[in-house]
Length: 147
Image (tube, rainbow, N blue to C red; front, top):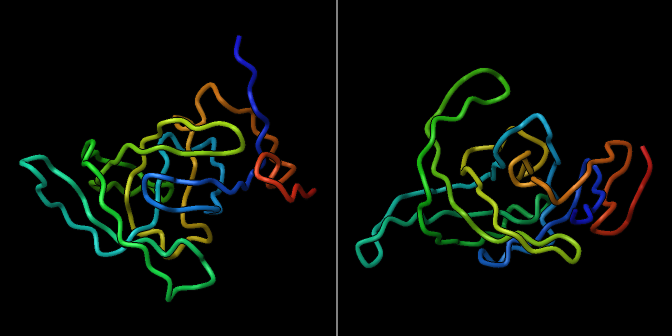
């Protein structure tokens, strides 16, 4: 059996294919799919294949910094949010990196502007890679702290 890494309720991850580094994510074992806050999302065609382009503000305290991203469209799904409402969301598949691990994850793109963290890391993304210690933060990404 492969050894699992312990992570806290908050971690910093990298999304290298989107040129995003040190993005603070909220680890959410209650969410099936990971979700990322994006703005100005639109579907386009690139070489007759569907893509999405969107803006990310990777530093939550610097709203002036914007990264324009482009990714192949992996899927469109109906997602039920924590408040019970459902919405159609674009889904991308991209690399994520945390500590020494790099793996593929699916991320739904949505408006999380009313949430504290730009990204939720859901159960599917954690998969068989991690155990969660909710009493700590930044266990695998450094600056570990207690509650």
